[in-house]
Image (cartoon, rainbow, N blue to C red; front, side, top):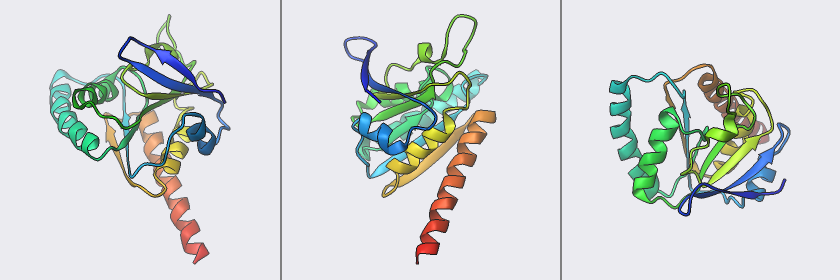
Length: 190
């Protein structure tokens, strides 16, 4: 797995890897040179169909949240697209000039509309991307969850669900299952 740079503009560049569904979180973290942080924040957000009133309230929430995440130097993870809650959080984090990794994980070849795929709607303020070699939305969830779990092994971790849908529900379910397995394993070793 070879990292490569994506150049959005002079100010916005990101490191990315292409990963198949069997990639390990350790390999992804190593390829992207991601260290285990003290704090991890994961946003699971449906990408569309939010009313203007909801978006306005979320802008205020994400503005306050972004300053907190920047202060804590939290590694932030989301679906990496320039839509919905992900776009709002990206704007809010940019205003803070946060320096911690901001990782987007998405299926590289999933169709967005007639002309574009997931890889063509990347949110340009992310610092890292994991492009899962798949063409179905939701196929990225197991690797994203595994990477979040790997990075959060010794960290304080929070997951926020906003405007959920089927994929967001899969995100949350996968995260809960991973934590349950981890705690069961800990209990058995004692």
